[in-house]
Length: 620
Image (cartoon, rainbow, N blue to C red; front, side):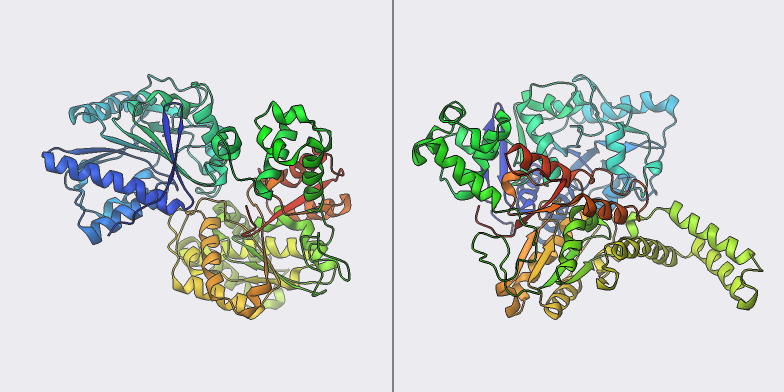
């Protein structure tokens, strides 16, 4: 039986936004709507014509449709599907082709006739593209047009592969991919150099002609572009914004993807609200940043002219509010992330007792923790805490074949250097056999890629004086899966529960809560959150600190602990990050710097960097 989904609906201009805390609930809601269209059309004896999307976002929707097919008998025999896009130059068998994606994520699990499941052919010669694209459009038109179009959204605001500059009248065609889009795909292709430069995509005009459109997004990384797509004036520079005029358009979002929308981020502009401490801090920080004023320089009129007269009336004056917000923000700053021994810790984020804490840092893949809390890690071990860095996965997916080739080349040179290994007997021969085997044994290549990433992480942790504090959990979901193809199970959860109960920490640092639930970070977060139900008594006093990885800094009002990083610590952190390949931390380097700038702008002391954390389940 399908689940009843509870969501909150906002109306922004002409567009409905349905927002739920859990992305899985949003996906269920969307899948239920698709199922209802399929059934309605079947009852009418007509085909259900669906426009389908790829990427990580729709995965949860497809999983629910598969469940409905298997458990509720949802039939796909009357469905004709048309995919939005395909990379040009990839054949159907390529693991990153969208044909392969659709087979793996949906088509091979339901009873849609293969001739009714349409994906653009990425191997069309350029001279034939225009003709084949016109035929794709004609197929849709002959079936009466799209009944339903499912969309995701890219960081550039692209829908399908309609990049900035796409015309509202554009049709199915070959386009050149934006550099940002290619960079975002680099992880899937294990290297930017492997990402195709062109793709075939339905046009904006084709999409807008669909009778019903659902645009999905989850994760903090999509929040900014969602706000622009809904609140900015429609522009071809932001293709998703061109949807605003559609009469049957719904944005289906989880809470964090909706978090930058004015009605969500600044709810006081929509009417009276309940003013929690966190909401007061959010309002005052937002006001200070908007006016480019330190908190203590805000005046009554600033509150009155910016929708905060209700808050002002509750506290009587800007002075009282300013002092409250300033002290709350100031109290987040600490040079003692493990707690300062033998002090009154009433206004400190971390209790002073016990003086020496057991600290566990969970990283979804090796390296994710380095940019986000490298300075904090160094500080914790210097201050005498027992730090354990746990890499939940091997990280082999982040290592490209070029790295393997470089290692093979080095080993081949060593094997050919008889003088160097003259006393090693048959070691030259064994190295040669190993090099040859990597070419044909995928399991061995995977192991080699994992060892390369382990080498980088070991060097980084050695730089931070934590080499002997590292554990590799190598959760099975990652070893047997791939990006957008992760299926965690009880074995994954059991390994994590067993480890945490064995270590029984006083503090845990973890990321992923704000990420796409289909991503590595999102899967690891869900496993961690589920593990909390199986902790021993140690969990009653354990603090869980959330950190942000992947170039997504906390907003100043979201921060519960701010750890200043000195210039010397910054240099050490950069030295540790340099142990990874060039480009590994693209987009992550400036997070701590941006938090420091935000605090400085609010009137707090100026620091080189600030690494920021949020207390899990802190009162909002």
